[in-house]
Structure formats: structure tokens, C-alpha cells
Image 1 (cartoon, one colour):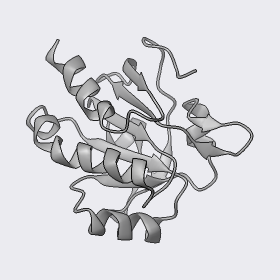
Image 2: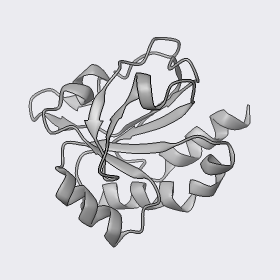
Image 3: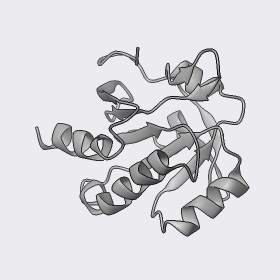
Image 4: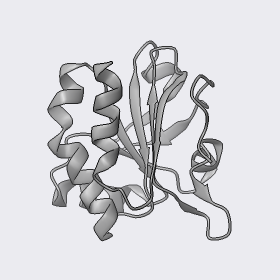
Length: 149
């Protein structure tokens, strides 16, 4: 099960496709954030999900809420995926799977990230969660609906 609403989001420090390292507590301090965990770049479901976040990006940008996609793929693979699908947000590489595990977004036996999306408030508390391995396109919509409230 995903982390529960109202709990503190685990801090992390991960390399990004923007050639920097993103630290939640430092680089995103005081900002609401969307983190979506997904299994693998270039797979059909993950591509559909990433493209849905791309297509809904303006809604998040208008609210000044950054989006980060996180999987265990390395940065070169993320860069190819980002370029191929014109993604306007950073992808973060959790090659060790430690951040996925901290967010309860790792399938235990196969050590692959599962599909779960978190909305963090400006204090980095979990404000919303959407979990669904096969509802690829519903993740972005779910976060936008939470933000409308």
C-alpha cells in the first residue's frame, strides 16, 4: 500500500534529467510537488502515463507545482525517453530503488517500481495519493482534481 495521506514525505536526493541533483528538502522547500513513480521508460503504460502528464502540464504549471517522474532507469535512458516524448518536466533516476522503497512504490519480489502518484503539500506532507498499475492516464487527472478542491 502507498504512504498514507497526512504523513511526511521521505526526503530524497536524486539525479535529474536537467543535469542537476534534486533534493526534496532543499530544492523544493516550501513548494507543493507531484511525484509519480512508474515501472520503466519506453513501455506502453509508462509512455501513456508520461504523455498524459505532458498533456496536462499546463494545469500544474499554472498552479506552480512541479512534476517529477521517478523510476529506476538511468539518466541516459531517461533523457532519451524525455526527448522522444517531449516531456516538459524532469525525470529522476532512483537506480538503487531506495527512494521507491521509501515511498512504498517498489514491488518487493521483482524490485520494480509500481505506478503510484503523490501530491505533496508545501510542507511536504502527503496531500493526495493515486495508486493504479493499469490506470496510466488517470494519475494526472486525479492530481488535478485534488488541486481543484
